[in-house]
Length: 374
Image (cartoon, rainbow, N blue to C red; front, side, top):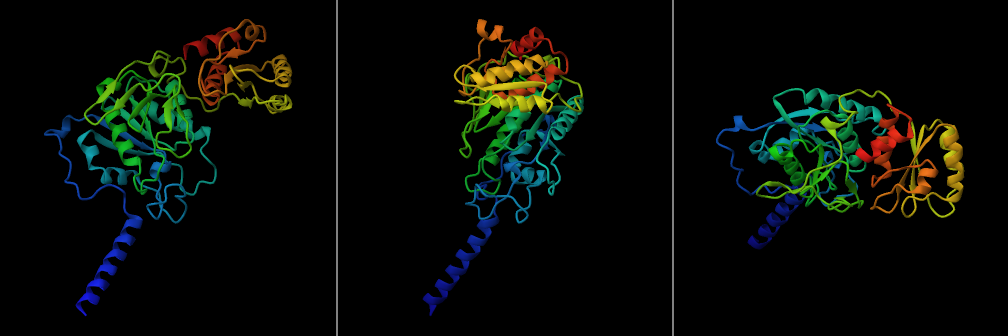
């Protein structure tokens, strides 16, 4: 009889644990509370700005790390991050700024949202009490937003983008550590003057260089050509090099409002890629075209014919490479074709730079100068 009662009790306890695990945040609860600095008033004030993403998502059960969110799983409120990570209060004075789109928004994130965030950041950085900003963001388009902010926010204060590959509730989720490290980077004096940064998986990358390279793996973000700028190691934040391209307070595009940007499209090159897609882009209002070319940035013969037709209508064409590394170089043939080399920018980032350049000029030499400097 005693054995049966013990078995029932054990089964009930196991069931309770399973139920609680389905909803629990995957942060160890048995550890003692973190030590706090003697004088927290001396900590820097960091704005934690939420823009949603996987890091702000929940899923059940906690083994679910790929199919999360939806009406049945309420979003993570920014205050939840602070409550779940008391360690943050030992690094900075956290001020929450919730910029998430409405939970029932039917349209995906648009340029309007990006422009709104840039405007808000340009306002926040003018406050002398604020020493840095952390922006949580979905990983799909994070690198694009980071580069846009890198060009249009006028400040030397750290702006750090962070996200996660797994939901906040996922077993072995990467969100908690990534968020903690991002706040550490933003609070670091060494991060000043380095432009917009990206901090995930303990790597610190520049907004210009960082790229998402894997759909699900937690080590997805890297600087393909140049490597990490520094590391969020457990003992301290360390930097080993400086960005050399123009950004933030050194950008000619920074501190201005851009309600809209000129239309720029991306054409992908592959064997027998047709030119009529480029013709269609021009017919639908494109002012610029980024060609993601084969090898070192080469369009197909059909695409080249379409490029000439586009240029006759004043369309600016920039060449990038689909090789995930390496520069598109300035060559006599490319100069003769009046195609601007896009350096080692990914096509989606070259698109952003060309859009901003077209707000100032359509001169080929001047746009070439911009691509050489940014």
